[in-house]
Image 1 (cartoon, rainbow, N blue to C red):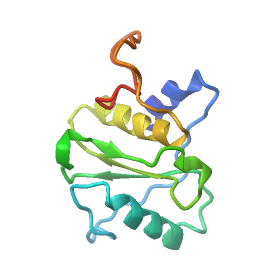
Image 2: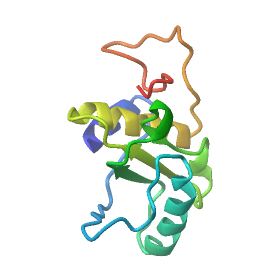
Image 3: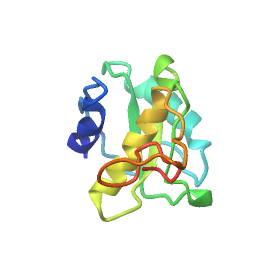
Image 4: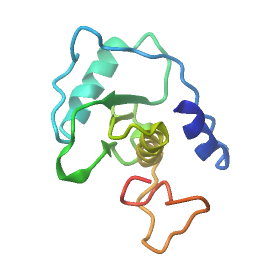
Length: 134
């Protein structure tokens, strides 16, 4: 998944690296709901639990189905603020590249990218910043 995301951002001179992985085996560490309210809870969890691990952005992959057909949430330009440099992505497909595309989309919001116009076309499929999640 990270390799896919790295390929997407390589053209922009951004190198995406996985520096850590936490698997919550004994239950969720935050209340994960079907709305973007999760972002605040996840931000607080990140600040408390990942201070020792230098990172620019933290993504939560969840099996919870979000409301309204969204597959992920991230604050626009969140990367500029260590308190809100997070994203939450629904594990919405058995196709890992589709989930990776959604995570790349949410990272795009974190670095300040907005949704592409409907007229956007990209080689090989939909644009990563298409409103549908890429």
